Image 1 (cartoon, one colour):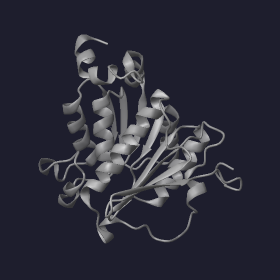
Image 2 (cartoon, one colour):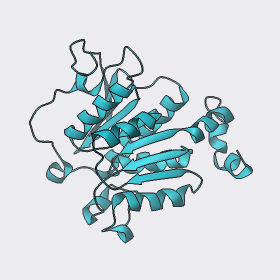
Image 3 (cartoon, one colour):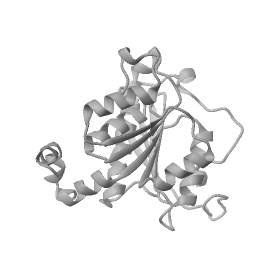
Amino acid sequence: MDDKQLLRYSRHIMLPQVNIEGQQKLLRARVLLIGLGGLGSPVAMYLAASGIGHLVIVDHDKVDLHNLQRQIIHSTATIGQDKAVSATQTLQSLNPGIRITAFNKKLDESALREQVRSADAVVDGSDNFATRFALNRICVAEKTPLISGAVIRMEGQVTVFRADRADSPCYRCLYKEMDEPDERCSETGILAPVAGIIGSIQAVETLKVLLDMGETLMGRLLILDARTMALREIKLRKDPACPVCG
């Protein structure tokens, strides 16, 4: 690292759990982020600020006025732009020393598998079950850690799936694939900072996975009720009958 990097990441380097070796590991890391909305916004910004060397960001939507209530990576000036382009501008302004690869389209199965295979960790900031199930299936096949989050109304949840660990459950162990429609914030609403809380936890868990630091949320589902500001935890166990990881 050069002098500017040493100064930029000095508060990380001061931490004995990170230090200079850990920061160098982050600078060599590659993270795939799916979705640049309410969850993906804080995830992307904190990972960029933390010095993740290569961020691969994926979102096929454009910035709309109603996004700005919670999708803090975008701005009024970028309304109408592709979210991937808008987010890239913000991230490059925040930390020009990292590499960003942006996809402003949906990735097909083959392309998604290639990106998952190349990543050290994958963060799911999507808003629909189809994407979550597909991403989980590929992460299990490629044995890539998956940091999963979801928010709706005044509630959120976050966990970590480690397909590289034999005892880790996967997303399919938690949810069964059904034909029921997704609940979306466009229909139910969402309190803006709730997305920021869950996205920030996802960013923390991503750094912990990359640094092999502390105890991650693997095997634990953390649930937030922002109405009472209560956190509760549910133990998750691997389903031996799971069609994906069992």
